Image (tube, rainbow over all chains, first blue to last red; front, side, top):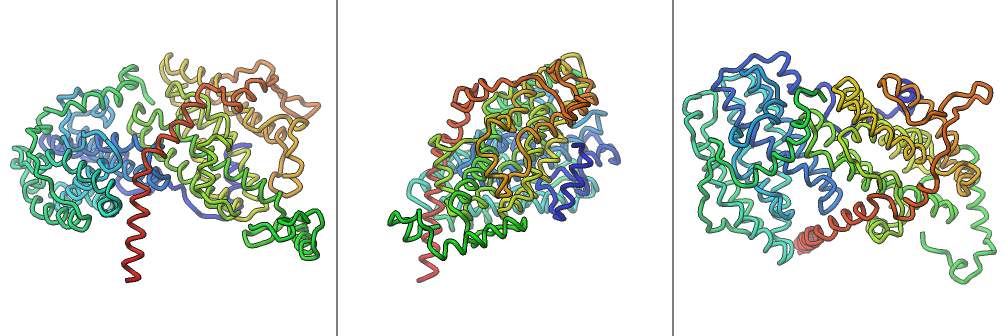
Length: 286
Length: 328
């Protein structure tokens, strides 16, 4: 049987259901479209796009590990979906950034060294148990939702367009993390304890997300100043934790400087795994 | 379905008037090639056969996620990573539809899952082979999903409604999966020497196991006749294998690769494909649990189940509290 025959046979069932996968034509602003039609950003804008792309890439890599390991099948699907969305954002930001240096998204993902990555420490943190992954996702999704909402007003049209697509998806990620935080916070004594533990080990990486860097100051109107998101973030996460019967833990804040290439000890392992095959075959296409 | 009073008292050998009437209605449905729906009466053997087949299929989707999940974090380009993630996630979705279809036959998902974790249920033996290189993502998509499609397209017309409908949706996605596998191999076949070698090696390893996915030859497949009479199965194992081997014999030429079968040819007189004798001893041995990854595959499921227990318990406790507060 040839592909065409198979298609005909499948079509004969008259069911117009599309694939559940996101890798279909018609999705606005795919990385491929940016690569073909996009205008190269300035060096500064590219560096900013790189920070957003790196956060998403590292987080997607972390989340992808859950696929086939989640507590129930529905969560294999949900975490897989979220990881796919976030990888899509990473690809868009990295592709846009790559145009400034005449490179590709893959050059940036696979051929940079650890100190050239600009990801935040929060996204580098290991998955831990399901509760750790959920709290990490809650922290990041609320942040990204606020960030992308502002970024839709960026004077850089490509960044604004990527953000416009991403903000809708991150809204769902935020709902997912919120629902699980409440469920696990209020569930059993064991689950509440696990959530308190998750908050304690992740909270030290919160302040880094909101630190304004030189690049944000230099790109007024293009970039979002992270510090301006803090108040709304505090209110939103506070409301979720209250409903979950959880509290903001009394931890200190780590001296985390991912934006300038100083990373947590976890990133090196993550990159080693992510890059190993590509680096074994320099110059190969896949 | 609960056993009837006559079955419980050991009188099941003598059907009641109602049972005879029900059997006649069922036979008429099958005779007209109509669909049997969950509320319809059906013979216990039909129910049992379908429950076994649909749940094995669901388990295969779930276990089948593992060899591919093994390469998600190492995928060599972001585009490939994205496609592979989508594919493995689709498989979890297929498992979910199929468990739902199986539940309509009266066995709960928890019970079916328990059968898998305790080793009482089978799943497709092919997933007990290891995915050793990136090219295996191509070979699994092209050959394993290809064989699955050849098996499954006729199942879209299976007599049991929920199964047939689930299969329509699944086949559409599988068709995409097979293409992405072929595309991976195509890219490798046009790549460096190392990539070509990787692709040929993967094809060599998956060719024979994929042909054995259709099950033993017809003269050694005792359950097939009944399944065909019930309109669950539409073609015999050997007919499906023929269809598949003919397809890949053509497609491998596009890749510029070869199938590891010097005997493979189309016999014009017999009008059929001749392939080498398959290693059924190995097939049986893998089914018995001695494949390279049987132990690893089951343990991954058990581990996910064990480590997720507190999450499921908390979700149930929360749901119970919510229900209580709604009542109050």
